[in-house]
Length: 444
Ligand code: SF4
Image 1 (tube, helix red, strand yellow):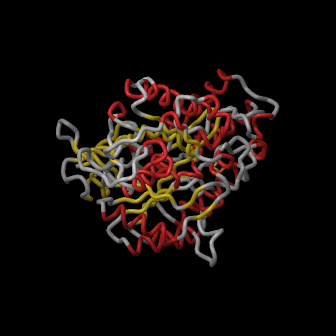
Image 2 (cartoon, helix red, strand yellow):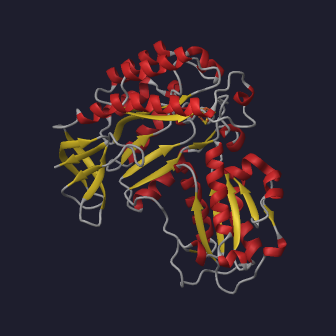
Image 3 (cartoon, helix red, strand yellow):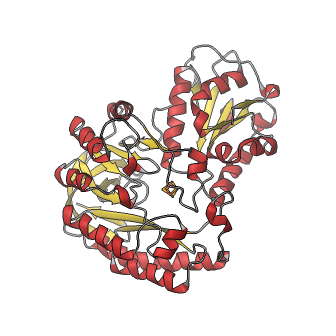
């Protein structure tokens, strides 16, 4: 889909227009917003965090499941109801997954938007905003430039690839993001260097499928090589790998994780299910026995490693027995953290047409039952850390002066935090875990 610019919203401004990003969805979208923000900053645009003060509101949408699409639509409608937008003094640009997924149909329906920029065309963001605003000058300094990173200043996400070739039957991502493509090492390294220079002490490597990094590049470099090279080049920085499919867990990667102190001994491996028939219907490999073996291999290679997974409850055709088997697996093979999602039936995916669709209540009930099993198994694992000494990266200070951060066993935004009594944001401090409450830890 080409970027579309509606002429009637174009307004030439003397000053550099102020842009406000509203980013929906996951960390990968946040990285994309930051990249667009950098391009716009280089072109002289200004930034504001206040949508009501913006000349252009860029809503970077998520639409991988229906609920995410609805949240993105709500954000667009909220922006459309702002007085400056209603008066025609500010424009809305819809970027990211929604225009990629729904194409021209969206442009016909969403007349509130002045332009659409699908993920594959985000490099065009400057041209699109120039088209809308008529702006072509250097920035003035009456509004602050957009901070380079929106999240905590002490960690940053760095994308190492985009797209996916796996075509899991329930997933819209390959249709939205296109085929898998690794970013060259030089690009990844430059992104890491920029974030470290800006103060990041932890880099979280993300992609739809991190384990495939390098497979489409010349030579024999793989994820293990990449992590090793980055950890070597930035020895004072923690590195963490997220979204690693089971097939991506290589012995080489585990060795790097075991040997390098600045590579977090942490793996996020989305299994999605453990029943072979359900996994085949999902167009995924594996079964409970193979996954038990995989976890055994990981724990033997990296003792004390922290493991996270995500699971889908209520997939079409999932029988009571298969669901029980999934609960049993979680109970027998306690992960440290488990994310559970009810199956979401998405138009345009192969699973949409499968027989045996469960009703919404049943999917919700199964998801909640699985969450309960996971909580019962995972929280004692967190409590078992009491008495252990850990390095904690201090992230911030609450209003009452309470400091908080994360240990290497806690990924940002999903695994809770550790409260500490020393250090400033950006410091890495040694603490002994004195107490835990569900997924939170307290160190002293
Ligand atoms: S590996 Fe992940 S992104 Fe790729 S199709 Fe499967 S669920 Fe979607």
